[in-house]
Image 1 (cartoon, one colour):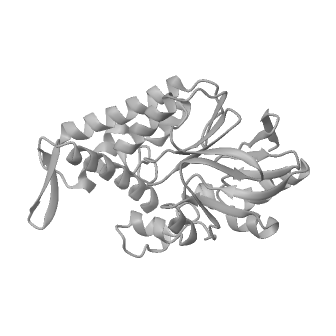
Image 2: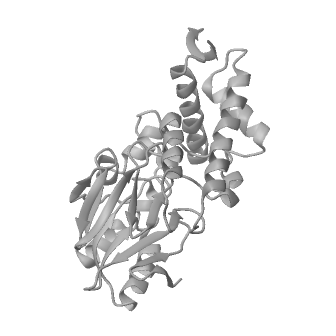
Image 3: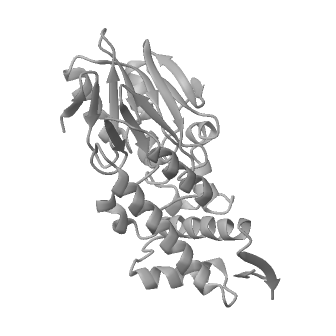
Length: 296
């Protein structure tokens, strides 16, 4: 895959997880994410170097494996410094934390320690917070976009906003079944924040760059509301969380075909239950040593 120029100093390497390439007049480059593994990172770096660019920094929008998996290879080859937000940093440096979190904090067994859930670790040299930052002399704006992960960030430069997984292109939304988010209130707030921007281009991590994402944002919000209503509607009788996962997957016609996918769906459902609890729309109680969810 070749680099695609969308502005004079902004390129995209289109892959299953899109990578941004922002350059200065000295042909120094800041990468936005690095893909899932060394294989992708090798191809990415080959294209970047063929274009005459020299990677100096990597900004990880968040710590999921498909965004950080190429960090060790690219930073090892180029000496690039890795930057990330404060809460994502421990997950980048200690990648066992992601599958452990999915597994309720317990050490994850082998099937959960795969490249889709656990990347190779890398060291973060600089922590980023919302606001302006200069890297390679480039005036970047860090945008807080939590919800999909605890402390996800976007990167804005020259009218191009790299959004991470703050939204999914509507053409891909149904494929995800129960889109993975860990904080529904923050996710909805991030969608609202994206509506307030007037950018030339929006680049999601999954899907095509777009000049207008109003319909995508509406589809993402509708999906959240739809799932909230489906889960809320089932709480007229008590349910265990895992029973709700099974019910919802059956209703949506999706298959938790392996432990990793099951735990991703389970975490997403737990995020909805937590949201309903915080909204005063759900409660928990213990019965026969089982934690049950029910309408408030």
